[in-house]
Length: 513
Length: 104
Image (cartoon, rainbow over all chains, first blue to last red; front, side, top):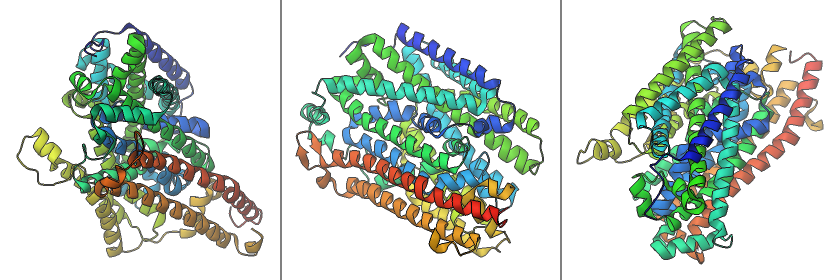
């Protein structure tokens, strides 16, 4: 396994890549003719079916970190990579049981709608936008870095050119096609990714009489029994628990995922779509067990690290070993489509925070007309796209899966506690919500800065102020505590509890009709 | 909901909503125990996860796969209950309340 076509332009990859771009731009053109109002731009006119939204949720969720990142981690560290496979799935039942239905019934376009509903609009919207933008931008950087590396390796373009191409394509999808185009890009991508990963896993298993245990046994024979056991990646027990908390509760605070629940007609459709999404995502994460250990056995950890230090090219290298250069090209194009779709979803939710939450509701007290809001949302899309391109170039060479886990830590600490308390707790106040969201976001950012990863690995200091790589263990409980204490200290606002209660369970119709 | 149909619509909604939250919170608790049980074993119980059940199949890998499968089964159970029982009760409640002019 010393020779690989990675690093040279791959004609199959280029053909698939251009095909994907053409198809998705076609979808965008089709969607653009249907995107006239803010309801279309942010929520696809609420016409998406539960099955379609299930695929779109899966498409939004299964990012470069899931496909390239987990396969890389498992192939180089063995069992520990699977912590991500399980952690990234278990957030979905939590979203289903606690969040999806009230969110759909109480809100309109963003999760801030729900938090702000009973409270004072302006401060809550501003705090929610801070949390949303911090999450979205960190997540975007990770995807851009992954895309830049991938295109550079597959198409022979420079890293910077690759970033610009991704940035321009995602701006086009969101700017012209809004949520409708973004949704269909996610659906196409999810189908491609599931098919690609399934095919790759089948090719691996075919060599082991379709017995996964035989594959794992081969890995253990080759690299020692320890690859099937925990210990290589996470040495500090508290770090393991902290990472687990970020992964589980982060999903319920991701702005681009929460936004998807507004694209379906009602709470029932929102609920059913999570069930489909959980099935698709769970199936995919089970495949990562096979892909990771397959890459370990057939390619080998050392050969994988030679190509990319973070192990991110494990799945493409495995594809090349099993199916030759054309299959490598196909898998690389799938990985690229994966990234492109995720950045489009992220950009749209960032644009909604800037336009719907900040510009319209916080700055103009909700009194902007729909056409004006749409124009601001489109300007915000372009601005976010440019920010993503600049940051993608700046953060060249960072670890993709780790950066996404930090975005999850912010979502879990800044957004999730306030959202949950606004649904469940009647005594929750404006001051409590603002304090919880700002504290969660800023404390998480600060502790990430003080963590060993930044202080020791990047800044090369001898020690770090804060011992954990992921701060969620501390910041999630503290964000809840801050929200509760500040709420109890202040006066309770007079709200019509009955109307709120009705709307949470029956939806907007009962309030309007 | 024949037993509670004599109650006012808002009171019936409260009962129904409380039932949904009870089920949702129980399932969430099951989920948290399941996943953090797995995570705590990774952190503190490595020798348990290292037990070999068959060649290549450790307790750790089996539990990891089971966490994914069980999570999905829990969502199936909840969605099935909510789509059949809960929604039907909710629709009936919404209809009678709208007819009576209680919920406009």
